[in-house]
Image (cartoon, rainbow over all chains, first blue to last red; front, side):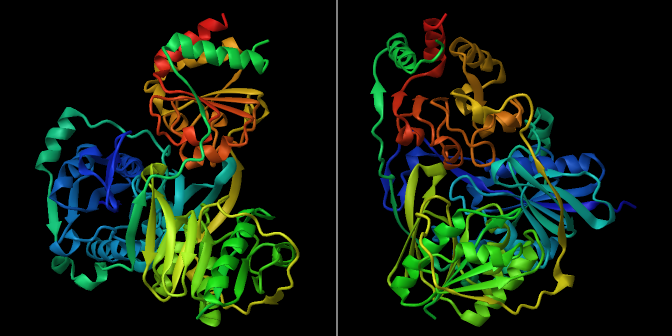
Length: 267
Length: 318
């Protein structure tokens, strides 16, 4: 009989944007968008899998709010070692262009209540809308303890306490003890996320990926109608007065060298 | 419900600049809503902070003297109780690491919509419109908040700091902190990024970002730094990957640098990075993407492949 922890990892598929793009209405036109596992979540998955490999966690479950299209991204997390996945989606979510923090919290809360994890490891933020608030909001909603922007977690978790490092600004880290159950938002750099092995990728195809609707979770549709509306999207005005050097690499390097010599560099 | 409540930010005995920026942002909002600007100062030497933060535009300062250091449970409890007492329309908090450790919990407790990392705010008394970036600064958006009350965290250095001396009433707020609900405790702090090199002392920095692609490729950057007699630094991903030690990282969570010349190579210029190097005298960017945010603050740029330009530049100095 094992008494390891259950770790829940919220995993988001984020939209990635090409260097050159166009905006249509309040969104970037589809042809310039790609999709990827959110960078911060990649570190959260790795941390959870390492806890499991250290014998501290029994099960690593991912949860994703998203349509069927994002199953490939979910399988990436499974291929890296998560045991099974939950995907939350519903027709009611189809037309929501900005799912706000409150709505995400309601959905994830229902999953936490069903799964009863000891530890939730979420990414600090998602790379597309960068709200950085869902993890802490979720902790508050389910009455868990929490720590935001964690870049170190001691792998002992003795006495139901997580000893973490929080990355503050300016190269200062705060050492904090947090009671479990807890939500930790994971910062990049906490570990080195692995690449999925071929065996992992094969196994991921057979792992359980459970789809849950709002009704399955017992969440009312009104809960996901947020108070926020994305009303405009535009390219930021640049105040740039940059001098761009044109030409081949030898020409541009020559011009830069001239500038550097003027500034007294390497003399 | 027309008042605005702003929450000051401090760490290890120092009031942080964003506190004064919150006063400016809060005053602007309160002028539109027609209410008062309240400032909350929680934990630490609150009387000292209150005196410092009493700048033009603040109507009332509420101090909560509880503990020396930041604790998110103390903050959450104090702010929710202040909210009940003052009934503000808007609550403003810093989008700092600590701000993000309590603001979402406050919003959840009070059932308020939350908008984080705002770079601009407008209100008309009913709707609040926040400007925020998406996709790492590639686009800016406006988000309309259709609610009676809301919580917003603001990005640092987007509003000017409030100046002058205010005449706010300073009052100790009578708060009941439930100690049993506090489930985390700070056991210490550590400065990271010490060691052999102090990049903040360098006159010339050759700084490398994600564009280098592979660790092995760092050699061409080292060769350039040697040729220029410059110091090597980097953006966050390089340190995250373990390719360079933390003491080489420029940015919000690393070092703030102000060299004579900063050469940003393969660095897109995310806001966290720019916060650490925008004070450089001359900024040169080498990047294939002409729309990269680094171009907005660069003085000179080469829109070309670093693997072509860097060796050519090194050759010029050998």
